[in-house]
View 1 (tube, one colour):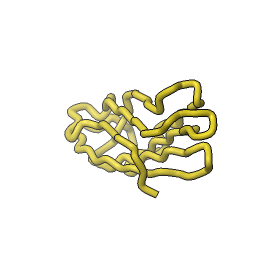
View 2 (cartoon, helix red, strand yellow):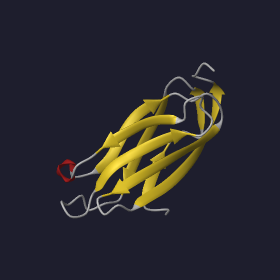
View 3 (cartoon, helix red, strand yellow):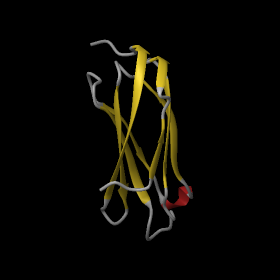
View 4 (cartoon, one colour):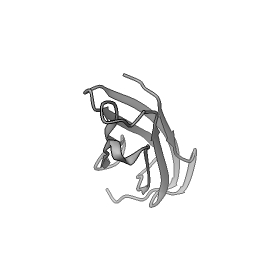
Length: 103
């Protein structure tokens, strides 16, 4: 199910070796209703699983920032797992000028 996820990724990444990525999920982040995990996948990387972040309600905000490696132009898929078991999905695309992964 698509949900309220904001994926910030540059439209063009000059260096695929370190592409900034921010993922924000709209959530009350209460004990009863919060994001428990954010998973990031790069669809055309040799190893698509980029990162998994595990969150708790105590974090107060469902947001993560990192730099990722991308092999080539591709879509980034983000899954947000909620405490009630629902999974939300979002995608963002980027163009990579110089790849950052070895095949």
